[in-house]
Image (cartoon, rainbow, N blue to C red):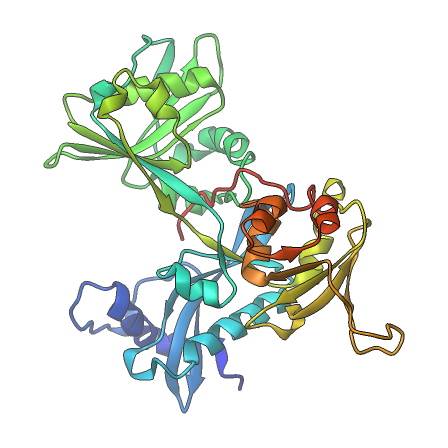
Length: 393
């Protein structure tokens, strides 16, 4: 049996106990087989001598990628027990997880890193950041009500999904939500209000929030809108919570707009925080999946270094039809070693691929080595885009 494998039902308690060493409440858990919480995804483990040397949970998630909704791999709950740390088991698990995703034809993978630097060393690049706002409700502008607000419940997700899809489609790596995801991960135990403009039949936006009445804090889980009118109305709706909240907290895709829109910008605090990390699983398949308008204007040879996957470690030729082939540098037909047009590690390439950074910016910041011709040829292939991994998993 391969050392990296799905766990059995009888092993669920052992898997959860190791996971709780990092994310539990601090004590030593003692699970009955029937009391183990369900996992979001498939529980896997790297096993030697019948011991879990390292564990994780694997997922498949649909995200907006290369102009389409596509499945990608997700890794969560990655833990190496302390008695097995420092022996390379975590690295082996990550390599095996990537191989598993490749077997499933998933060309890209995402995770929410506990340590950005750790995953960076293993080929994951930070792909997005968020803005954390904090402000008193009365810091916001109230333009007056111009529409209808309606409280909705967990079974009304279908009324919100069209708004969400329109909003999320502007972001690379935004998550497409299933009905179960809506009910359990977005709407459960939250206050949800949708906004419909005057004369409209369908919602134009909605806000999901929680209220800490003891601390008098309103936490905006998401504020989603189709139009600028809907954004203004939803923010004004939040501002009308003065009796319940002294402070509003809102994390959203990186922006600074609220400083310019607020009635009292001095009362608005903001900070930028790192988000998810992404990684190319298969260079050849990832390049082939790009839309035609991102094709390079001239063929480019790209040398990629990958610390985990030998399939990605080498020199590749990307041509104007978005075919990507490995260049065998020792082949007699070549005659001498290929001098690549672009040399890049897989973590930076993974950021370029989704548009977190452009190739021109990466070259200027010396995060890669490229000829001027290569940068010009790949400027449309690896330009900047709005990136947001919208849902934590």
